[in-house]
Amino acid sequence: MLVSKPGWLAPKFGIGVPVILDSLQAVIEIAPIRSPVQLTEAHCHEAARFLLSAAQNDSISHPAQGVRWPRAWIAPVGIGISYAIDPEVRELILQQHSRSLDRLAKAANALGTGQRLVPAMAITYAAALLTGHESLANGTLNTAAAYIASDLAESVLKPVIGRERPHVAGNSHRFHPFTTNGDWHSFPSAHVTHITAIAEAIAMQTHSTPMTALASELVALVSWDRIYEDQHWTSDVTATIAITSLISSATVHWLESRRERH
Image (cartoon, rainbow, N blue to C red; front, side, top):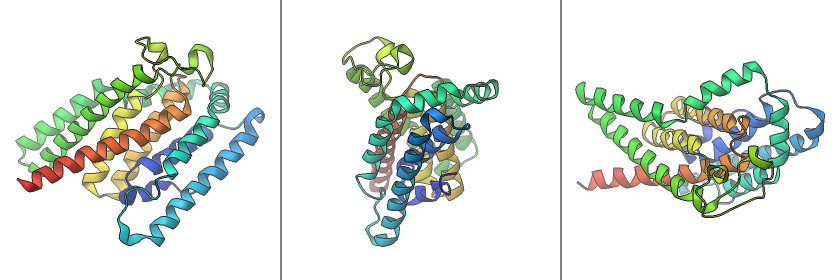
């Protein structure tokens, strides 16, 4: 393992930074490393240790500031690192395909689909109303709103940015902005957007370290799946996590503030 799991950071800073690190770790360590990319893998480990150490130092040095993100540069640096190693990570993942990992990827894929997540939120909301749990009902509405806001942003960004999916030509630097062709919709990842929006909303509202850690691991698992299935680059999922975390947390914060005023 790189370091101890960064889930403990999430109650203080949201899931964005911890899950970016978790996702990089899941991508790199899900299977044994092959020699062609050992040097890159070692560099990734050191970078992740550095980023996590910076986050931990900030949380100790500035406890009174109450900032959700350790420093503004940590997420961009994490995204930059993942962008720089996109081709190497893809090569590594393609070498690691197996029947057992195929089954894991199939299960992980379902965790990021609206067909599963939307009914789950609807059932939770209905159950909360029927059992008189008003706080759970309000929390579910907040989560659904965060999901919708994040999904809308993802739907707009995909065609505008127009990044080519890795399975098409294997070139991480190819872009074709303003296209409706799905082969150029690598960023953002819809699956990662969906699960991150829900996980961030849950983390914000439950203030539970175990629940937040579980949500973070699910986001990391879905992120790994999208790279494993050659649908997205590593930087696609890390940037998606960062953007969605901000949108989701801002939506929940706005709704809670509005509810308190009324």
